[in-house]
Image 1 (cartoon, rainbow, N blue to C red):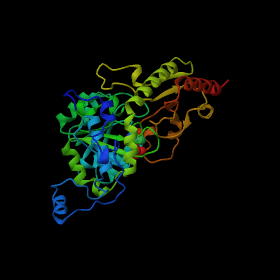
Image 2: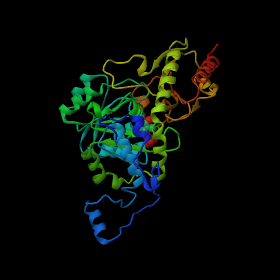
Image 3: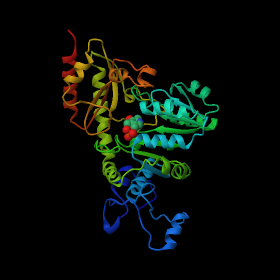
Image 4: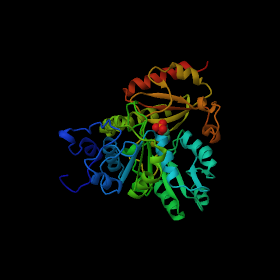
Length: 388
Ligand SMILES: *Cc1c(COP(=O)(O)O)cnc(C)c1O
């Protein structure tokens, strides 16, 4: 690098060191294993004295190129990539817990994270106390004896933002490791490691991919935490990322700052317009009431709003032209997801029910379409769905 100034995220993403034969993107190493030229080099690898790739369940050069890029982007020492966000989350959580451990987790976490803690972890004697992330006193009271404080910010559905610096300090004082799900903000808008959080996890299926064609996950932390996962957890759970998907994620990353800028602009504009609409009673978007202590540098395109009883919610969803109905978010395409559809799901540990998500809440993911087209679409669908 030409000078010592920290390189900007976009510049970091636009350049790699030259790959083999001068390639500007990492070659896709579609190989399950990597062989050794002689006995001594194989033994050196087994002893951990060489970093030659061995076997793609534990290490692959294309995946490694992605991991190095993402670690730098989050401001972390090291990264491990996984075949899904849930693989990243379960590996990170299991790496810091022993049987009988206690976890403190904020309300409104991603539904499968909630089920993992309530169902799977409970089977191994791990108990989780769920607390309101805004309630500092409740968190302080819950922390003694806990090994892990698990966070998401802004939290799912209600989109309230947590004070990461404060929570990281509280956890450290209580001897608990902190993990945060940073999928919503992406490393472009929030770098939790710089706030003192220990481990960052991502569903890379969302903004980091950005093209709705990959399911993947990432964990970023210190060498020590990542080394622990790589030695004691991930080889046995086996949730590896494929070289081909790593390559697609590298491709998505090249434009991540540009896409996030657009999601921010369109999301803010539509949140403000929706707030002024007579059939809308509340808009849950952290940018509408920014906190003085905020660690967010911008806002992504996922937020929610509550509609009056006048609005027929299924009719609203059906009337939309550009917002397709579906789970997930963070892609180029706009999506709509009414809370009532998950409240009515007959699932064990239904977080929307347990945390009391309003049945009048509707979540939207703003894609990369022209904002004016999206606003016209929302307006016509609201008009169509208004009961006489
Ligand atoms: C989608 C999502 C996950 C799970 O990620 P997958 O890649 O689907 O396994 C975790 N956390 C959040 C906030 C998500 O939106």
